[in-house]
Image (cartoon, rainbow, N blue to C red; front, side):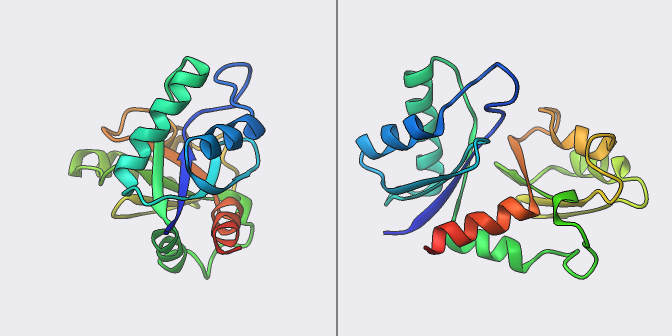
Length: 178
């Protein structure tokens, strides 16, 4: 069965939308998912499932809402899709601090208008690259003050978006390969 990576959007940030990882692992195992692992508390899950990624997203969203009483958007990539994301990194030769490199995972490709918004929000020395359902962003001066990072964290792009720093992306592939 294929390994899949599920990325939960906006959990365990501040006091809202708290999802304890031990209980999440138990819940998913109880519902038939195999070899469930989580990475840090920000909603990074690796599991084995026969479900297609879009179907798995809906299944996980439903389980989380039933268990905790609030909605959480879920983006799923297969292990091979995640490996491809890493391989396609347009800034691999530039990034000197992976915690300032982010990949935003999208539920679909941004339309032309939203792609323009993304490109317009990028201010030197930042770099941004839109590649299908992923957006690569390099924030060498930090993420906290970046207008680009703020835009990518909103719901204004017409698609669901959840971002992970490069260290997390690499760790998720490593976890999937264990």
